[in-house]
Length: 163
Image (cartoon, rainbow, N blue to C red):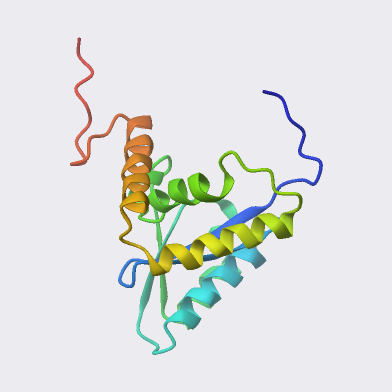
């Protein structure tokens, strides 16, 4: 099916607290250092106690900038980068499947603000119902999809590709 993006695209900057099983984020018009730094600041604000925070990121160039590294060091935020092509190693990735399934699949949002409202509605519902069977099933499905791209089993061992 062919379609046109008449209003451009947006990027979801997602944040996930493993300990609280809480997901949040913002939609932005662009990727970039400033938006990544804003997401990191929201993570720090969620833990104002000053305890060290470990943030898992992929190796996009704007995640590695000097401004971000300086801010992280000053604010007790340890940046942990996944290896290249190892998105399956980041715990937030499993949550993007349900987010897509429940907010974007088979939808036609009239505008970016309408899409953002749907995303935030889902995030509120998801955080109140994190153990809902539909959410858990969608997470399992997404984990399997991500791992199958690299032929990796659930236990972290490569699949036997010999015939």
